[in-house]
Length: 240
Image 1 (tube, rainbow, N blue to C red):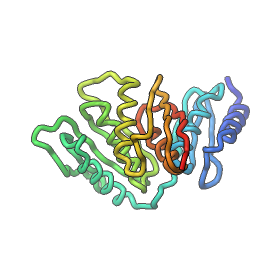
Image 2 (image 1 turned 60 degrees about the vertical axis):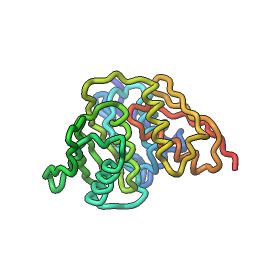
Image 3 (image 1 turned 30 degrees about the horizontal axis):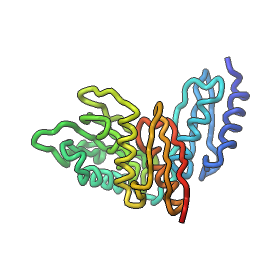
């Protein structure tokens, strides 16, 4: 059995070796027992969260990770405001027009839209800035896009995408690529026409040219937001 101190020391070294893992409220808190690593804290962005989880998962002895890492919100918001903004984003998205939308208000589930012939249901709950999406939708594209829209709300600290797919649908790299492209095209701060996307074994590769470093980072974060993406390799070049 792996020694607790050795594993924790190895995880800390792995986290320190990746410059983009930027904790915002002190170091990431770690505990380890019986092969299970618990990670708690806040990091600067979604890339930092995903890279921290990836770095820890590679440490010998770590079999399971309990993810309690959150992302610093771009704009501090209360749970009600986050919930309402997620609700409105889903209501306004034409790709989700055939979904029933329901929200939890003080632990009571309220229906805010029910199409005549719904093909899916999305339930929204927000607690301590963490958005949980539950229910079922008609395909991976709807599941992924709903999750990204929740991430885009500036007060969101984390998104737990528990949406099921009904009827069951096999996932693929092509489906992930399509979702990333859709997200980039939706993002008003990114010029999707200048970005090429390729996915291999759930690893997304971004290439092309963007005019600003901020846009390069936004495009990478957009790819990380997509459910099922294991890694993002950002080869976008910045040319003003």
